[in-house]
Length: 336
Image 1 (tube, one colour):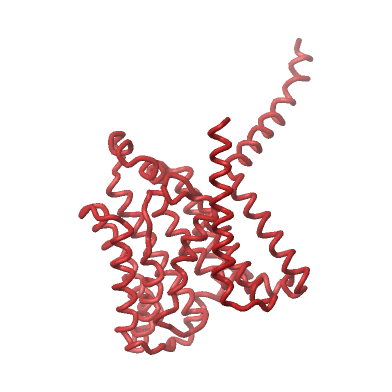
Image 2: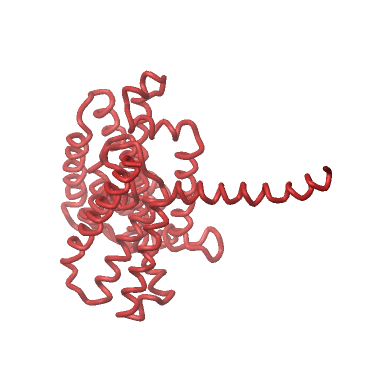
């Protein structure tokens, strides 16, 4: 009997590992499909333009996509709770203008960056207050703050672009806190891991899903619905501000319209990544992959030589396909 137990025991570990792999695949099925789609897109572009598959182009994609990735992670938190944040593009622009103006008035790079982050804190708090305390619709609230922040971005410098005064400010984006790893990659990886672990492993993170699935049920279960929504809007605006800082650090110039298209791209990235605009679903991994897909599409359009005006149409088709796939998969699961 002892020999029999010794013979059977080793088979249990592989079986458990198989179940864990199956569970992981099931949990990230959408994300795996998106990753494969990105690879296929890159290969398709590479078949036309070999330069697309070079390490230099991959570096360009990651650097160009880093601000969108970070902004999308913030928008994801709001979308999971069943809300929407239309103000992130304007907050992105205003942060850059305020930071550049602060440097022009003698502030150093660090202090000017902190002033820029205050923009995100203020607008996130306004959004959160009006949605949770005043009870206004998220679409209306963030549309208002989108207009206000966009207007202030012009008012700060009368619509003029602003050069960055600190000669070392480029280090925020392209420096290396860890040797060999550019900061823009490091920030994206840290935020991805932190937000994914927060949503999946922490009780407060699970609150976001519960609130998005049913705020009434979440309230009856004792979940702080208003506080959860408030924190989602604050985090979204803060990450939008931080992505704005990364961008002006890269180009060393601030533009009042720099974030005009990023709001739609961030929402698109979240939807492509598998989140539902009705709330209750979504992952940080999916949002990052969605942002990368949009960046790869834009990069491919430029390399192939297609008129850049088609970028919006191509991105729109990608969103439509993602939504249809999500709807089809949910219908199949419901039928089963």
